[in-house]
Image (cartoon, rainbow, N blue to C red; front, top):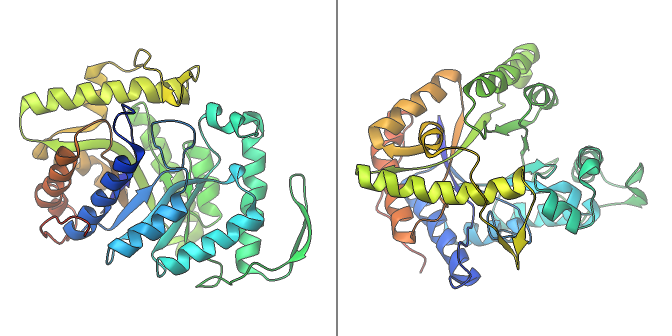
Length: 349
C-alpha cells in the first residue's frame, strides 16, 4: 500500500491569509516528498474556505518546481466547470511542467453551492461530466477532433502542444457509488473513493465493485489502482487526540453544510452547523489516534486490497502540528506497509 498526503487548503479564519495557507500546503508537499511519500493530491474547489484550491494545475507545477520525485494527483478536477477545448491544453502544459509526474484525477463535483453559482445545474453534472470526459480523452489522444454532442459542438481542432505521452497523463476517477466504481474500472480508470460517513459496509461494497471489474478484465486491468481518502494524523497523547477530534468536528460542521446540507456561506466562509456525526463516530471512522491505532486501522484497508491511502491532514491544525504529524506518520506508521524513505523534513527555500 502506497501513501499520499492530500493538500486540501483550509482557512478557518480570514485573518490567516490565503497567501499563508498556500505557503503552508506547499511546505507540506515538500515535507511529503522529503519523507518518502509516494504522492500528494490537490483538491479543486471554488468560492469557499475548505478544500480551497481554485487552480490545481497551476499549483501542481509549483509543487513540481519545489520537489524531486513525488507524484502529483488532482483529487479531483471538476470537469463540468471547465471548457475541455482549453482545459486539455492546460492539462498538457501541467504534464510537461511537472515532467510527467501528474496524475489527472477527475470528477463531476459534489457541492451544489459552487457548481450552481458557476452556472451549472447540479442535476446536469453527471451528463456534463460524461461528455466532458469523452471530449477530453479525444482531444488528448487524437488530432483534428470535431464534436457534435449535447454540451459540445465544434469544428475540427487540434490541441497544441501535444501530450508528453500519448493520450495524456494517467487518469483517476473519483466515485462513491459501488456500481459506478465497477463501471469506471471496466473503462480502464484508476479509482479514488471514500466512505464519507465511516460506513464500513459501504467501503466493502466499494472495494467489491472495483475487484469485480478487475477480475473480469483479467490482465488488461492488472495495473489499475484503488485509492482511499480519509482525514487523519497520528497523535502522541490522549489530550492531543481529544484536541484534534474537536478540530475535525468543527471541520465537518462546515463540510456537511456544503456537501449534504443547505450550503450557507458568509462572504466565502462556510457557516458552522451541527456536525452530522458524533465525536465518537468521528473517532471511530477517522485516522486520529496513536501511531499503533492507525496501524491497526490501516491493516484493515491493506487486507481489503487498497493500493493507495490518501491522508488528508488539513482540518484546522497549526502548521507545525501538521508537519510533525507527516513526519511521525512516515517514521512510525508507513514502514508497516511499504518501503518509505525516512528523511528529515525541510522547508521551501
